[in-house]
Image (cartoon, rainbow, N blue to C red):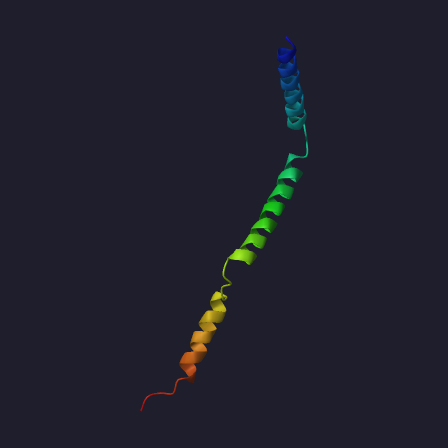
Length: 74
């Protein structure tokens, strides 16, 4: 019965912790913190591994400048 008692004690402990977590009133704060952490980690990963992209408006401005600099064909 020693092993069965040990298993029952572990299950009761997990159940107590689950009930305690369910009674917390700061779920919104925890979720906001988790979201902020996830966004920050995502930005770090993108900065590290994703190729840097030129901003869309800057690309359009560069194209417009190039077309303006080309002289008209006679």
